Image (tube, rainbow, N blue to C red; front, side):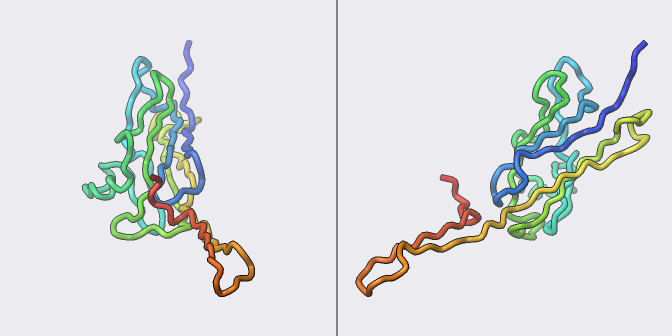
Amino acid sequence: SATFDMRNGVLQTDKSVYIIGSDIFMTLIEPDLDLESDEAETWDLDLVEWDSDAATVAMGNSGAAGDSSTYASFDPEPSDFRETGDSTGIFQIVIEVPSSLGGTSLDRGELIDLEYTDWSPSGAKYVGEESQDINLSIYTSNFGATIELDQKVYTWTDKVYITIVAPDHNFDSG
């Protein structure tokens, strides 16, 4: 005899807060998508929906409704979820936090809900009988800027050294 079961998917990211333009390392743990035991598989990024004040879109090239600029905004690498090895059921992708989607800019501190719909959750008798939304909330960073002076009191001939710390304004990692 044999038992066939379905398992719940898990959606994870490497952090919960991201600077606009930085990379999100996204992992989908979904053994039910491992259909071939002897090869690493790929699945379209459309499996995940991006929902923020800027836009609500399926992230892959199909879900962008033909709008390739939306898909390109995420700059996915590789272009699809790729399984980490033969029969692992763990799929990964790296996407970029876009500065805008569909012409609407993302705000600093904006809530982003990522959603994967599991069409074969645990306890279902067959694929599609039930579904379960797997949600993950992340944010764009909203670090406050600080300004510091090297002294508290100056004479009119002193040099003033001003230090500005503003992580959200560092768009050039080089």
